[in-house]
Image 1 (cartoon, helix red, strand yellow):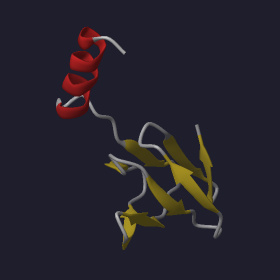
Image 2 (cartoon, rainbow, N blue to C red):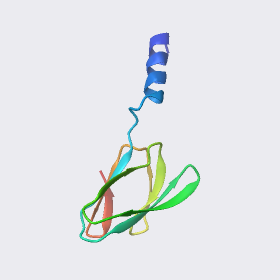
Image 3 (cartoon, helix red, strand yellow):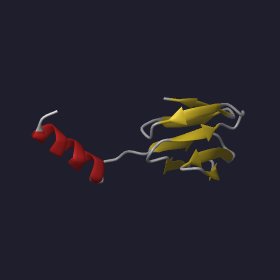
Image 4 (tube, rainbow, N blue to C red):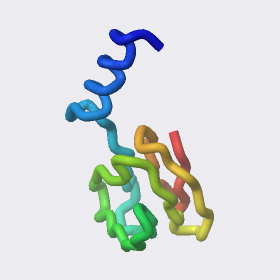
Length: 87
């Protein structure tokens, strides 16, 4: 890797250009995702019609149906009909 590529990689890593995963709840009732990130486990409750950002640096998320998925931080988790899918 040349010096320009290294400098660009460093700039992107330290800039605010990082992305976060999003979760959108299309249902008329709230749903909760369990997010495990950096060794910590948190419940993320998403209200009806609400969209939230989370998981900026990669995480595991447990969906409302119990399925567990690894996220890199760029995905959209869409909840509809009580089920979640990753887009």
